[in-house]
Length: 68
Image 1 (cartoon, rainbow, N blue to C red):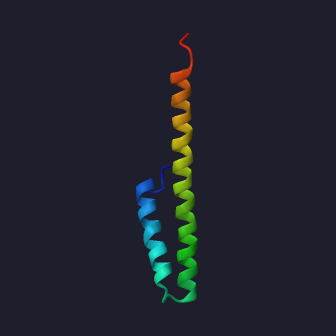
Image 2: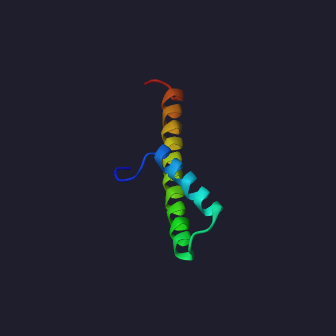
Image 3: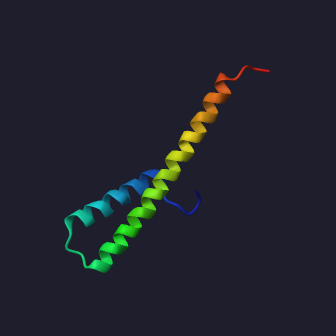
């Protein structure tokens, strides 16, 4: 995932976005931009988690398969 932040970076930025949205006080346009960025970050985190799950499943399958 070359041009994307790491899972930890995306999660930390998402936390910041949520805190800003919860605190309120931003103009509507800024709130919408924060929301959109939050959606992007959530998608990035989900891709990282999906990839990790796939890799784990593959490692377990390799470990559990009979040796040839």
